[in-house]
Picture 1: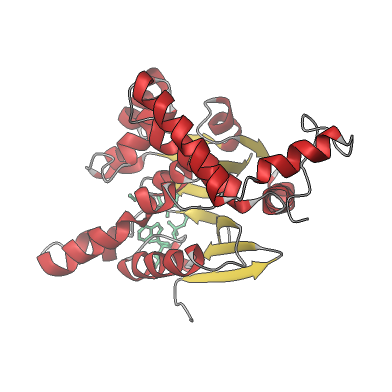
Picture 2: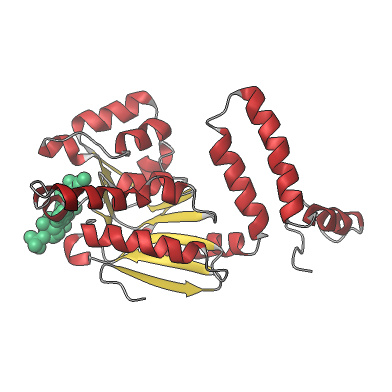
Length: 269
Ligand code: COA
């Protein structure tokens, strides 16, 4: 399938989606939301894909919602607006619960609505030089559509409110310090770093990774007792789905073939 606002490449079991409107700093217009919704469906069921990376073309990761095409042009078109809103949801549960590991490679500008992409990915690696900002107050809006929730989940309240209220920017190093991203590296090394990380994940058993991710994401909504019981059931589900793959791992350990603390078992054998 060909796309107008994104590029998709699959190599070594890693799918890389590049938000591709560099002339508009990769701002998300309704077409991009439609295309992202479709591509996530495709990649979810593509067995050749084990890891998903999202990055941006040019000097921008994503300048948030397209202020003209998403907000302004749709204000008097309720049906188109409702559709665009629904398709914009790909950044929330669709991405958060994507059944494979996801990595945001934040290469540059990252504003407003783009925070939800970073927050919903399992891991985020930023260029130290990237610039983040909750710019909404600067143009008369509040950070809506899960953006406020994304910063509430990730930042200390004092940092969250500071950036929500001032609209000031911060760089990739600061994003890492506040744990909005996992870590930051110099921009020149960003994609090489993300490729290595994605390659590491792509070598692990995808059935196990999927269960481990679901265990994390879903147990958050449960109380302590229910979470414990559910995680035991989830673990049994993984044994069933994986054909007790853990026995293979432990047998390799017993034979002295690897150290689980320091590396991965040979799950494909
Ligand atoms: N929506 C629509 N268009 C956008 C956009 C957005 N969110 N962000 C950038 N663009 C467009 C600009 O209008 C400009 O288009 P033009 O060439 O047709 O005039 C083009 O992208 C390049 O942007 P420009 O402002 O010239 O680049 P810059 O390098 O000087 O500044 C930004 C980059 C990201 C700091 C600046 O574009 C900006 O502040 N964008 C808005 C960010 C924002 O508030 N996003 C929140 C949305 S929820």
